[in-house]
Length: 150
Image (cartoon, rainbow, N blue to C red):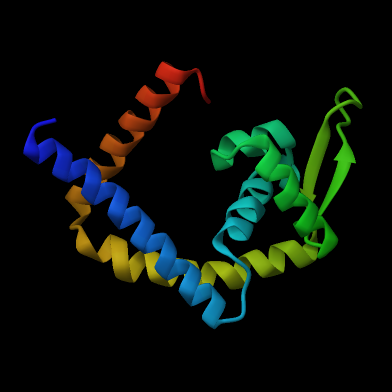
């Protein structure tokens, strides 16, 4: 890979890891759960009526199903989500966010949003933000088309 292309990729990977690490640190400092909990709660809450089928949630979170099952088990044990049978077919499971889960997600978002604004978005002017957002979406779509993911 030519030098400039490698730098872009490796800088992206390193920036992502560093940002997630700092978000995790800030959440822990506020005695809040790990970032993955926020991701799962938002994935569920942003679904129709605050619900998502488990396979849809795995796709939204870009996480393997077996890891998602364990995570949702922990969220359910803490009363943040409930699992129910799918009303559509009765076979699949649906995760539903609870009021407690919504409240926790909002508390976590205050920390998460602050970190994203301060450490990431503030590094780009509005035009570059738009360019970066479009480029990253194109990369995501190319990866999904290549591997058959959603």
